[in-house]
Length: 179
Length: 279
Image 1: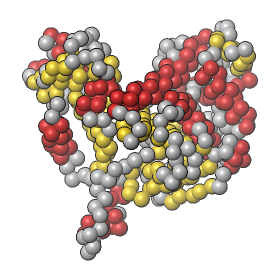
Image 2: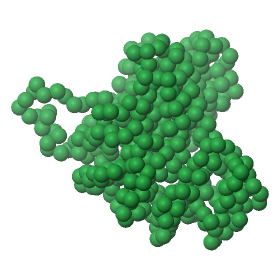
Image 3: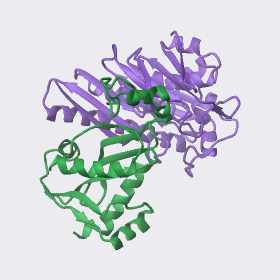
Image 4: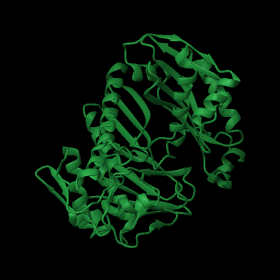
């Protein structure tokens, strides 16, 4: 799987959705590592990307009650008939790239978060913080996109992830199972 | 040295497992899988949301007959009972009916609660639990921390492990490491909020994601604790850190209890300003 094309896809989406808002991100597994984590060494995979029609997107939205943002599904089929799918869920302040494993029966076998993004708080409007970009000393290191580690303090609820999985299960039921 | 950091939705939040060891990627992946298996196991044991969990079985049946307890459940119940006594009732896992009433916990149809039922109605003996009156309990104030402890232990052979369950965090190597906290006013990350670890585990409770009302209810006032602040507690286990954040929220003077459990407190108020309590 070419990492480069995935990167382009996520940055385009990211740019569109977080336009103008400063965000930080945390990257976890690569797509290959996620595939190993979710499926182990047993299966082989063949690319099986899917392009949803407008009617299919509407049907999935109606059945799952969750908006379908992407018509293109980046997916692989496993030798046992399961699916390995890359997906994205979007909330008000956060944006998450997921890898989801579905069994041949369309049940969720596992989920890995590949990239988690979140907007910074209103502190960034603080003149002191903004000065690092407008100040005289341009040699000062840029602090944007600095790796944020070890946050103690609840993340937002998993509702968006749960909604995304719901949408994927209905996608399997209405489209993928027939393929 | 290789490092793998994986993140999965579990325990109603996102759980990160980070493992560093002098081994190949496959071994690290195996290890991380083992850590997540422990998290899943504790979820199946202690989830209030899951009607098939061990906790739900206790909630459904313990007032009709003695129910056998798994070692994990017995440990956490005994800990909760001791803490109830040490906090003179401020830390009380039998507050669950109030949380269900407020819509913070699901209203399963098997839940029964007599109005005056409380801790004194719970008997734990010979590895079994029985309740004298219908009541039900919730372990939301401590189960995440407990799960983190089990996951870290599953990787005790690894050089460096960090498990973070939605902010309940434990690092096997914590010396000179820092954590980030969220601004209590809006729950976001600002650049400045970085603090040194003071022990292996830390947990944080705050009001920022529930319209400034933490889902922490006082057994005395029966009202939610209010305010724009967050409390973080450092301790030698994540279970203790997790439980102590509730103690810190609920008691006007939590220090004697914190000291007793070897815990130390860091509270943030909005606008941000940190107060450290020695412990």
